[in-house]
Length: 409
Image: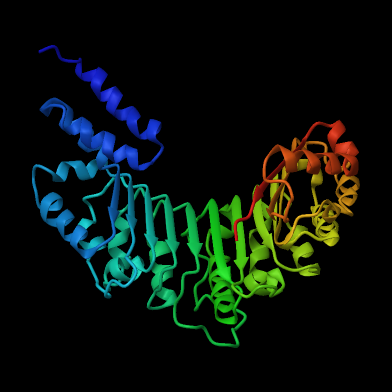
């Protein structure tokens, strides 16, 4: 029976993750390859072990018994690059000593994700904060909807990962901080070497307890090396109460300004109509090249006025290369008069001030009006026509992009 050269079939198998782009077909294709013949099995397993999904206690126990404790299979742990944890809704609380058992056995992991309460399940052991330092190559950490026994437990994790430079936090929680927070929320921490983040993406709800947690975290992080290393910041407050308006800086606190001077890219969700404190934060952005403004509420004329005021607050506008404005009309059907006052943006972005500007992208999420156009060319072309009339100078420079997506209630 003819066989492929080893280099050829290994290249074919190695391309499967790129071709499938993380879809369900990826695992199916790799499992199929592993069954072709014994020669294809090792290469297929190496690709299958690129990402570990741990979602139940049973799956974790199988990983320990059949892989970690197997001399034949343990070698494939060297192939793991990403570990993703999650706990299923309704699953009883459980604790597994993942960090303690796998420390030293996953030397090439670069990304760890804790989802849906899994941090409590897999990081609750007292020695976890120390043992996690052995995951020496982890650069990206995501913690989404997880609860910690204390703020100190979260801090120990972040300071223990020696290579961590990208952090995503979505509504992590810990015991509610005091209603009256002291000026220093770092619990005695002086400026420390870690973490030294390059990228930070934080999301918190606007209710009072979450605001205090957000301020506590940002104040502590501002006393770490991240205060001078951070290049990319995404800050997204959100509210489950429709129409609630809370000033942006009141959510994350004045310590956020400590990160401004080094930022190259900033993306924020603007949740209020008029906020001088936010404009003062923009005055600190001396290195900014990419700015994204996401407006949570429906499009109004003052949306464009506020955009104009924020970009005018930048101390060095000649450095800005890209501007993205994401607006919504998700509860009220989109009407083109919503773009009244858009001409303020054309005046604000004049060439002599924004010489390096290459892209201005306006994206609209909208609710379809009865009998109105669907998403696609019918709506985008009419929007484009209105925007072109209101932004003649930007259109002459050929840097405007417009897109629209229908919001499904």
